[in-house]
Structures are given as structure tokens and as C-alpha cells.
Image 1 (cartoon, helix red, strand yellow):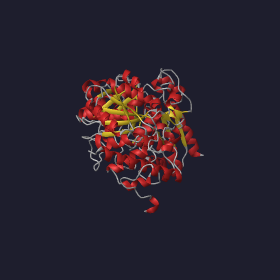
Image 2 (cartoon, chains in turn yellow, purple):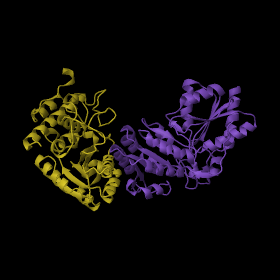
Image 3 (cartoon, one colour):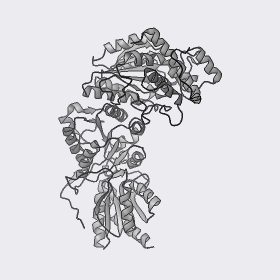
Image 4 (cartoon, chains in turn brown, red):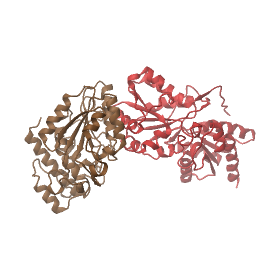
Length: 287
Length: 319
């Protein structure tokens, strides 16, 4: 278990990793990644029960995580590396040829920590529900976690899975929706008008909790509260309010930084706002 | 020359149902998912005997494919069941990303493929599914020909690690293969040796090819009859070896010509041993309502069409 200060230091380093990775590749998705840094840190360092040094695809006997909005791969990769699932130095291969760190997460290259490919949106919740079912069939009392973007809830498959999970009482599943209210073409309110996610999930039969995703204490408290509500016949969803681009002032709160890379000057500014806490990974050119 | 006959007709989907039940008894990791078509897919017996391992997903095929990917991740061997149309085109991206690219051990079991679905018409008569599935890296594609072969294939794919598309159908069809056959994925079955022409056939059209081969024998034409049940990976060696002997080939399938078995065979031959070839397949059009046997005649997939194709290819061979 890490202290709040330790978790905050990890989060700051992850933010540095995200902007450095996207800058080095000159492509990738910094906005959503930055917004979810506290969530990933809490999940991989304090909440989940798993062995970072021994990745097994089936995850039997341990907590597992499924990422549905695969474009936030920078925060996913950085967190897993910082947690010890693979070498931190490998972050410098992100989006480069012959890398295990594909633009969107994939299993084919054998990167530990990834259980399913994601990127084409709307598929992860079904996979997470299937994995949760397999745990029930295996009499495995560990937990399945999943992260979805809010924009991807526009994909119909999610609502098939939301109905299914409630009907089948999949109560070993904790889903988090990154409620940053932004998508590529603008705000989710302008594009598909949904801001009442709590009500929507409730009428579908889910247990709903809300949290501030950019407050590490609130993330820890709410996720622990969610764990205490497992096994009650209902799947659980956390509506996590975040700010896209959080921690980098010029990226904050705007969909403009969904999928573009900072230039050299913007990188310097972003790094100045997030001090090195755990040591930067070396850039590829310097190895 | 071997002789193929039948004493009864059974639907290939029932072969799937019987195979699934046997698998359920043998292997506790087998789970079955169905999208509101349990009776049509003949999954009732499995559901009755293993209710805890049967998952009703409702009319939600995209979710079914994702659930199957998750179950496979957790070490289960999921078999999904719905019509071929809803097993492929409707869920192509789910299969592509969550199953094929993610290398999940999911068995996509698809009934009511092709024209022989009959009266429901073109909305349900998918004739493009083999093409879609064979294009996916990591995917194995199997189209068995009768009840016994479908049952054997169902059992065999559980032993195979990786995603499989298993295609079968609705109508009662002659049962002419061995009930105790060993099903080898990716291995052609030389049903009958011959010297004048090779017929390569799959699915329901294997029986039509048997009938055609008999008529051709009466005309003094020696047919080498090859059943390709596994369209991918294709037994290229068996096909090339046979055509090197006979010098002419006809393919027969209940599928579009574009994307089907014939297209795969022509690609192999073009690269290795270009030869006179004819294809029995649907000619770039949708199906329609009607009785299966009438549709096979109208769409030129009947035994007589295979006979005519052989005569045509033999003319080319002579030229």
C-alpha cells in the first residue's frame, strides 16, 4: 500500500511519461490519458490484488483490468511499467515499429498486462463481463475492473452488455466511466446530449457511485466503497468526473488535445508543470 | 471406386448440437452462448444438462462475441451459437478485434448458412460469411458436409487452440460419412480417386458432387472427388497434387464465388499450377425465398450443374 504522497508522486511521473511518449512518437492521445492518471495509479498500486511480476493471461486467483477506451494507451502503458509489469525503459518504443507498445493496446506482441485488444470502441465492457462470468464459473472470488470512455457509450454494444450484466447479476465487476464530457468532435453534451449517466445506469439495474477522478483520495475512498458493495447481485459503475488533459494547463478541459502531440516547446512547458519524481525513462536516441 | 449412399437425412445443425452435448460431458471448460436461437441451433440438450454453463445473451450478438472473448480469456472454451448471418457480418468488428486479433479461443458456430435456409429469404441467407471469416488472420474456417462430419468437427475444434468459424445449415441432408470418423482440421479428404477431373467441394454441395460424380462415371468420366471441410488453413498440397494428375478442376460450394472456397483454390493454382477451372457458386447476387432444392436448381448449384461444369472444364483441358 502506498501513501497518498507516494501515489501523488507516481501520478506526476506518469503524467511526465504520457507527454514524453506522445511527444517522442508525435502521435497518440494525451488528453484522456492525463485525465485518468489518478485512477490508474490508485488501481494498479493500491486497489487491485495481483502480482505485477507474474502476468498470466487467465488471471485466475487475482484481480484483472480490462481497458475499453484503448486510445488512452499512454497512461495504461506508463502505469503498468511503473508498477513493474514490464521495464520502464520500454516506454520509449511507444508507437514505433517492432514495438510491443502498439498505438492501441494489443495482445499479439505479448506485452504483459494486456488481456484483449482495444481501440475500436464499445467492446471492452462485454469482454469484462465475460471475464467476470468466467471467475464465477471458476469459483474465483477476485474482481474484474474495467474502464470505459464516456463518448464510447454512444456505441450500442455497451447497452447490450449493461442489460446483460444487470440481468445476470454480475456482481464481481466494477466498471468506471471516464466522464470527461469530451469526444473528438466536441463535448458529449453537444454531440449526443447525455449528462445523466447516473440515472441511465440506475434504471438499467446497476449500483452507481460517483467520484472525482482527479482527486486521488476520493478515487481511493470511492473504489474501496465500491469493493464493499460487491456480491450484492448488482454490477457496479463509478461515474468518474475528470478533466481531460489534467495536470497540463494548456491541455486542460478541451477536446482539442484528444489525439494530438505536443511540440518541443509545449513538452518543456508540460514537464515544468510535472516534476520528475521517480526518474524519467531514457529516450530511444540516447540508448 | 468407393460408393457413397445414405439411408437417412439429418440436419447438420443437429450434428453440432450432438457434438456440443458430447463435449459438455467430456470437458468442464466448455461453455455455450446463444442469442435467442437455442432451438434452431439445437443447443437445448446442452442447456438442459449443463444449465450453469449455458449463457442466454438475448438478441445481442455483439455482446455475445465480447462475452465469449472474456470467457476465453478466463480459461473457458466458449461456443457461440446463432445464424451464420448474425455470427459474421453483424459482428465483424467484434470478431476482428476482441477475438481474432486478440487470439481468443472462441468457437463461432453458425447455422442456417447459405441458400438452403430456404423460405426466410435473402436477409438470412448469408453467402458471404466464408469470405469474411477467411480474411481474418488467426481464424480457422470449417464447413462440414453432413450430420456426422459436423458432429466430428464440433468435437475436433474444442481441441484446437484458437478462434474457429464453424459453418453449418438448416435442411435435412443425406448422411453419408462415417459416424466414427476422425476429423482432422486442415486435411483434405480424398473421397474417391480419379484421373480425368478433380472436384473440390465443401458443405451441402459435397453430396451434390457425389451425385454428379456418379452420373459422370456413367458417362465414362473418372472423377477425383475431394472434400475440403477446412477452407482455412487450406490443404494446398492435396489440391495441387490432384490437379497435377487430372489436369482440370471444378469447385462446388453454397457461397458467393467472390470470397469462397473456389477463390481460395484458384489462388493456390494460379500461384503453383495454373489449370483449367470452373466454379460452382452463387454468381454475385442475393438469394430469395423458396424451397432449398428449388433454390439450388435456380442458383445453379444442383448436381446437374456440376456435371455441366465438368464437361465444360474437360473441353478447356482438351483445347
